Length: 260
Image (tube, rainbow, N blue to C red; front, side):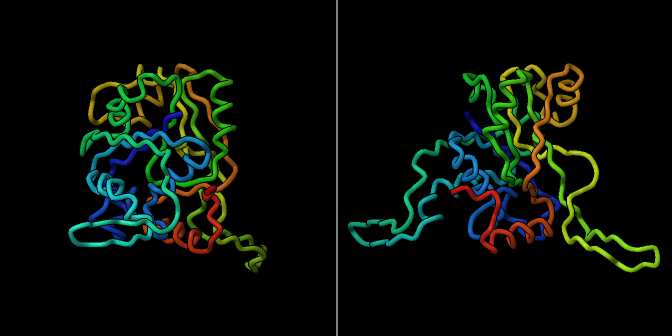
């Protein structure tokens, strides 16, 4: 199943990390978060990607055009018989990546609408954001999607709490403290969508069309949206705090999304 990744936003809330890169190229560990997302999907057998490019999309193109040199050790011999020898892990040779320029200022609905021709032969395809990681059970989500037969499946997640949560006795004595609690409220959309081709009936040509606004409300009105609740790990990278958290998780060697 093809995987469409929204890679065009500016990431204005995370400019403290980088003002020269699009957000999907900001690193978690050594490699861009986009690489982690694609590795996660490929690890579950989905390695046919459509990248919806926009802001500084050339940085994403350049990373993959020089992919081997960016992710592998290599030996370079200069001179008349220039030669490059890659020394470590095998390449992800089964990845197919389509780079689609969907507009510098386009919103999410417009970006999806503009890659319609690249998924025209697909009954179903997946959509995700270029800044979110999780350990979603895609096999279960796909089965759920196919079984219910509606147009869109949204992965519901409980967002991590932003502040430490405390339980205290009446006199003020703290009896429990949770550094990173799950939010106690309802579910939110965590991305990791699965869509039938009929989703394009809810999109139009406007550059300012936000997928999560008019199209989603219309899908809900028509009873065409279902939620697959994910109880495991999920974390977006909206802020510098999120950037640090994801890098700490990766650096500790126990990243839940790592399936390779």
